[in-house]
Length: 277
Image (cartoon, rainbow, N blue to C red; front, side):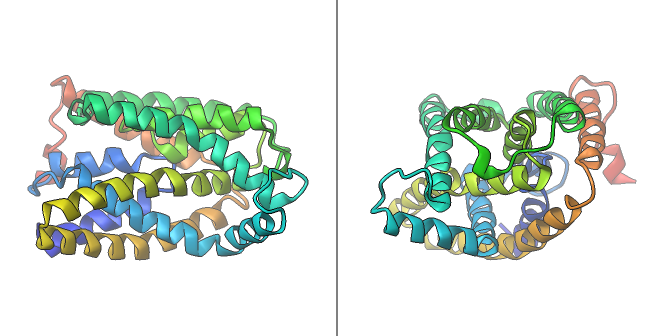
């Protein structure tokens, strides 16, 4: 894999991971519509690790409050302490995707890298996001969430195992359905990504280490670094955007992209014509 491919993939990952447009779908499509070879699932995970490191840095004050609260309560679930409450909400919301992810790994994931599947997911979940973002009540903050809300968000996150769905998009959609403010929904979605993606990254890292391919490990580390830089910028822009604006531009983009992918997948129009002009 060339340095240029790593940079392009990192840029793509950094821009799309926290926007509700599906980073995994874009990473898969990148090789389908360019001359670069498919980077594989392991590289995808490395790119996601870079994004998660950016989340950890950006939300370091929040994570510090969680740690202080846990130490203060000796890790007991005292839900009156805000940091502790957030920790257990995230823990409950993470369990479903860990279970579903393990099951999916057992059955294999190659069949998920289909243009038709990605196109339909990008299109359908964009419309659902638009409905929830337009008509949902906007009143609740993270501190107002209950365990049942966390379970619903966690179940929604399982859908993101299908490329094109968008992990951030589907969790934000559920948060909006539950009445959360846009910035609060985006924040909870980003924090929720930490345990799930770190778990996937740990497994991928162990596999790479066992293979002993130092060149591949070096490439993965480069991907983590570049992805971190681009992701930091994307998080800042998104959080500033949501102070005044809605998710409508991302919905429009997804509907356009999903429609084009489906036209290509069903042989109506060759999307590569757009890149060859």
